[in-house]
Length: 399
Length: 215
Image 1 (cartoon, helix red, strand yellow):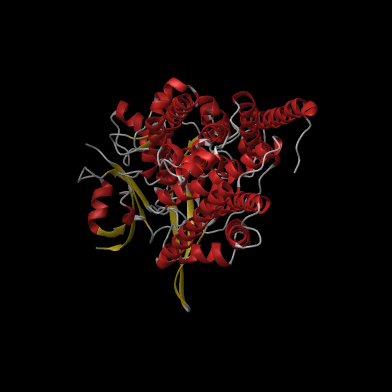
Image 2 (tube, helix red, strand yellow):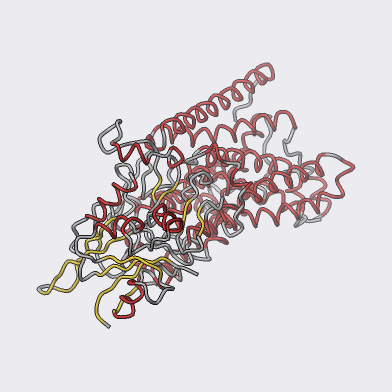
């Protein structure tokens, strides 16, 4: 296990913070370049209007909501061992949401008009709801952190945690509903997407939490108690399995409707997205992590649990890539039952390759989340402190 | 109450794309952006196969999905049935492009002209920096419709206030007018023919009617 020498610890912190800052700055520069040149410098076009930045942004936004599940397990559902982890999960939630929002806002065709979304609010637009959903999320998590960190506010922590729990369920339902309400596209337009996004958020958020927690423990020369490792890996396995189940149901239901069979054939068997789905999403992102989390030789070892969490995050990328870009690449069913073609890509499968500015913007969002996290855990001392004696004395892991 | 609609007689359309060219000329859309296009569809079974041409553009729906999803109310439905975009309010999020069942919307990302960096006179006259980075689509030549309000002319009757595509059609396949006026040419034509609207099952109530036979 790598543990920095105390003399080098501070220097390493500043180095990591600087790297995060540089990556964030490069992302910002890429956004400025795209703003100046227009989105012609991206791989996006008239058919694929949401590309790699959206994949990264939506991952960060969904995971930001999901990572707060750790806090909710402690505050709302009274699980003692999660309570000490609640502050870290709150910080990660704010950091990842900031990274995701930065990407999505800077990728707008007219990012300079962002305030228009607030001044001309459209209540029928789920996309527009974000003007309310995100600021309130920040506010609630901020209050939640306050109630946890200041002793005189502790009595209000449960209420703040409950409010945060409810709000993040609404927020993630909103993210799923943006796609669920796109009735014209074969890939989307199903009510299943809202609950599915919530399940995905649980899995991805917990995977991120496990990685960050492992890094912090290693940094401080600590070892995660086996009881806690077991609980976290069981929870992760449950969420990964649930996500895989939802994925299977989504495609089965979709394939049941004759109008969607061509699209399902495209994604599952006959396109550039087929490998990403079966190998990236199903094998790397679901089956391998589940095998690692359940196999007797790996399930009790922190290293393999961390590997499983990393694979879940890699699988999340493939899942969103297939879902967002694959869903747009397949042509709209303009004239059902007939083959349609024109000089303007009608009836044709489109292809998308992310350009360098897009990649830099997307990675810049990760940089923002990373920088905020590393500074936050340094300044606020959010390292989970477990009182195993208290847990064992209680004879249970619940209050 | 008015509702301007368009009818397209599929028996007359020959796929010449004159409407597409007229639209580009009238609205100065940049290369790669077509507010109007003509689909080429194979119908029938071998050996009795035919080609059917289907002009497509914004359907100016009575219940437009693009209006619902627009986060800034940049897309609105006017009292006369036209679905309009306020370019100064659009933030270019592309949510409407995703929501439109007719692939009618585009996002323009740069000032680009038919012959490179130098605009033609028509392009220079119509250039609007507010149209860069935002969503755009067929407007039913809204400036002409608005002109009709000021001059008392009748869209669909007077060419000056009729959409460019309708004026240009070489076979007279397209008609335009107020469907709420039973005496308008489009109302009378629809009363005499069998027709359908695209993706009616989605409940969008499109404002473009495709005529395929006599009543």
